[in-house]
Image 1 (cartoon, rainbow over the protein chains, first blue to last red):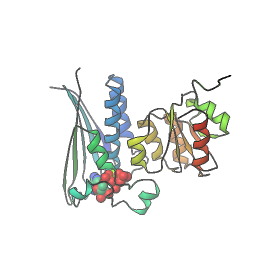
Image 2: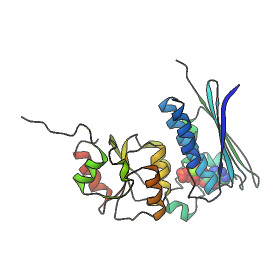
Image 3: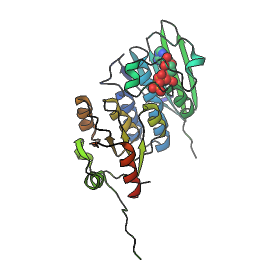
Image 4: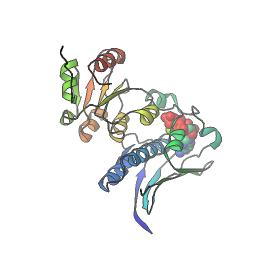
Length: 142
Length: 119
Ligand SMILES: Nc1ncnc2c1ncn2[C@@H]1O[C@H](COP(=O)(O)OP(=O)(O)OP(=O)(O)O)[C@@H](O)[C@H]1O
Ligand SMILES: [Mg+2]
C-alpha cells in the first residue's frame, strides 16, 4: 500500500525552476518528520536527477512515493537519452557544454552521487526516447 | 589566562566581523553558522557541504540557491568580486538564504573565518 505519492514537472533548460521539484520533496519529507540524514540523501539524489533532466535530458516528471519501509524517487524525462550508461555512471564522465561548466556543472559526479546516496538505483535509457531513473531509500525502523 | 571565542555564531556576526556585503536574504541573518565549505563544482558541493555551513563560491547564477536550500546551509558568500545575477538575488530573497559578497579571494576569507573558530 502506498501511503503517499506526488509528482512535479521538470522543464528542459529551465534554470529558473530547476531544483524546485527537489526542494518540494525536501519540504514534504521534513513535514512528515522523516529521518534527517535520509532527507539529505534524498535531496542530493533528487537534485542531481532533476538537474540532469534539465541540462542533458528533456521535459520530465519527478515523482516521490512514500511506501511502507521505503521512499521511492522516480525521475523520467523525454530527452535524447544516455548514449552509454556504463560510461555515464563513471566518476568524471560528462558531456556538459561549456555553458554548463561555467555554471559549475559538468564534474561528472551527478550519477555517482546518486549511486552512493541511494539504496537502490536503476537507470534506463533509450537513445531518442528518454531516461528513467528509479531510486529507493529504505527507512530503518529501529 | 583568558579564553575568548564565539559560542554561537550567526550570519550577522560574519557580516559584521568581516565586512561582508549583504546582497539578499537578509531575513536569514539570524541563522547560526556551524561550519564552512569552499567549492565551485555544484555536484561536489551537493555531495560534501555540511549542514549549517557558510559556503564560499565564485558561482553567481541562480542554481546556487537550490543547492544552499537542499544542503541546509546557513548562507552563501560569493567571493572574488563576482556579482550575483538578478535571478539569484530574487531567489535568495524568496528562500530566505543570506547572499553575501566578498571582494577578495575565497582563501583569505576562509582563513579568517576558520581562525575565528568556525572549523
Ligand atoms: N537525463 C539525461 N539525459 C541524457 N543524458 C544524461 C542524462 N543524465 C545524465 N546524462 C549523461 O550522463 C553524463 C554524466 O552525468 P552526471 O550527472 O554524472 O554528470 P554531469 O551532469 O555531466 O556533471 P555534474 O552532475 O557533476 O554536474 C552527462 O554528462 C550526460 O552525458
Ligand atoms: Mg549531472
